Image (cartoon, rainbow over the protein chains, first blue to last red):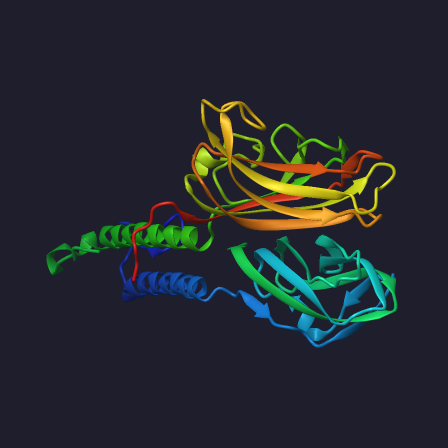
Length: 169
Length: 211
């Protein structure tokens, strides 16, 4: 019976077995496959799936309504399972009639993970931003959610960027 | 990798030779893979509070968030630091992780326990302290403040979300603390369950230059 190495399972014949050419090829192919595997890891490490979406298309938000940011370029679908850090910012393109505060939250599959609250006393419309870590599976969807207090409607654009800290195999 | 080959006079050694080849190849590739994965997945710890934190008084700097000495969950840890060691308010993590550049961050929802004073402010800081025997210390004796990441958030009447992150060069015996100073005099503040602290080692302190 052939045996195999404990970690990668490289096959080798045991003493007393009839040695055939396949013993050589099996071992060589197994080593080759593992080297390709390691090479894929190297390629991944050199091309980490970080991303940055510049200003999204605009979205109109009504005062007092906690609104999910739905423009396609304001969301991100996780490409690789791992620990990510997301940064989301929101800029105002059309000011509301009045504004006293605003809150931007970042969500994972609809669940709020973190956010940031701005005081807008004096009707300033400072850019709002939130940053934090998310442990994500491939396919998880990152979205934003925005609420402001005041009157009227405001038009906003979103920026979202993410970096992969660690991959989860 | 230098491997000897069996000769025609010694076919009986083929099995042994293939075994040796397989084991040597595994050792070499494993070492390579380990180093590659360590470089691509830098040390990272994420911790989360699992109890409501209450009683944060106005007018004084206080510790908050997940930290050593209070209840928290480690939600991610790919390091040798035991998961029951808080990354904040603790002497354990950085001697294990080593001196280097770290990304450090904090997120929380902070709500007044009673009346919320609109426009009162909350200064949130991640403070880095280093050993200094001559220092009385603003948080613990024998340590002095050397760096901080900070933000100021104003109360809008509905509580606040806060999130901050930055980079610190941390030495092995340094400690980090998450603090709050606020002016909500009408009531104390609570930190909701789920406040997070994370640290991510960006690089070692000393690196060989690679061009």
